[in-house]
Image (cartoon, rainbow, N blue to C red; front, top):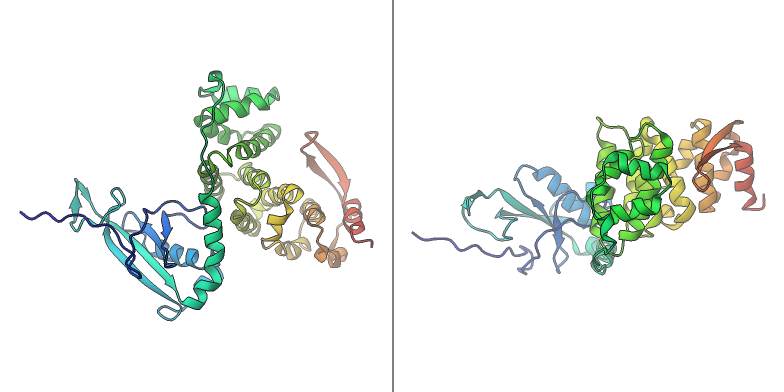
Length: 362
């Protein structure tokens, strides 16, 4: 009986051997993927039942995450699509048989390669982001052994109540399971506990970004998926994403677009604006790379609290575009949470507007 020897997968466009697909640090990347030296992008369909989403993801990644461009491309003219069938993701081979090592082989790789003019235009941004990601070096977290145990939800909650944030952070960094416990506190009925949990997410990400960036990346994705789940509440999850982006510089700036995407749903608007405000306060440059001008159309039909958050965002961004919307300003007072003192501060919209306007000597 002849036994087929598994082959290494090769790029169908240039014939080069490709690396095993992995989860890329891109906001729109849900499947494992990779890039070839020739510029082709490939995405894994591990089950064989996700061809549509895998194809779209490969096309979007190839376009540098420009969804509008991806949806406007013409097959064969703007890009070429090739599927590599019978791929086994466990061994990173093409077995050539329906069954291999007791497993049914269902996997396939979708390859997309843009036309040369489009490739030159869009792939430099993608390659830059991936180069930055690969330059990170994972360093083991070494902490006192007393922190290397799993906390119950009540134990972690007690640490937050007692303002023992440093100890709580040590437990999370020393024992990864404690991060799952912290996620649960984002849905705590007491807002003060949720706010402290949000801050702790930011501190955790700040400490992990150079040691274990993959963990931070996975955390952001899971928080965003939880928000998008219609069966769950967005309570503290969106704010936690904002706190992570606030504390990690430009490393995960691609997720800014996801936060803006939640603004269109009324039940998410408050949380998304609060997250964007926190980012704008400390990390305004990454917010300016996102579609922040969408906030202008939102401003004129917003309730007072949302208007206050938008004014604060444009103040931190030092952007003049909101000035022409003064006639849409409501004459109200609102309460905005002050993270420094952990209290709500009452302030009028007129006062917020005056501070914003004074930036430009009006």
